[in-house]
Length: 241
Image (cartoon, rainbow, N blue to C red):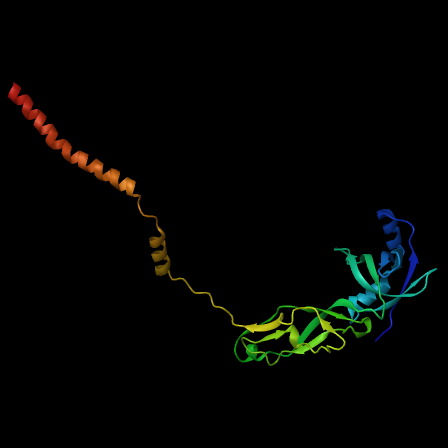
């Protein structure tokens, strides 16, 4: 494994303007914290940090920080900010590392091979979880986990418990039953025919309210009873004459 070194210098100035001036010199504002020592504000070489983040071990890389006027320290990149347009580093948080103290880290999971469930059964391969959390000594941190998924068929899953972890050195923090990858069946959407759509519309149409029906019925009965009453009135007038 390559030994990385990051050159740094104490940083006295604070604020946005000071940070901009620092970045123009090829440095980036940073803070080194952790352990029993106080946090140290400093500026670090931006290219050296970017090289670490692009390495195989990425942010889990343990490197040496050389700070002018201070002793060398082991550290890891804990967090960083990147300009969304240019992609250049804006700020870095570094964590002091004690090589004899266990720590928690997240390690990426990569897969290879074509699953049988895809090749022979027409399923779809899905990567569900791309990293797992572990607890171990800094020297035992894996770069990554590479898993062969060629034997996955429809309904089978690759779980965190399937990872090749040495329990004597590494403790799995992620739930062992957590699904990392699986092969699923592609669900076909049912086609809706015009006849079915028309039937559904008819069934969904609201029924006429009973009150309206009742009102119509009473009105019709009233109209039917009006004719006999009118005839009876005319007949009564004829007798009076």
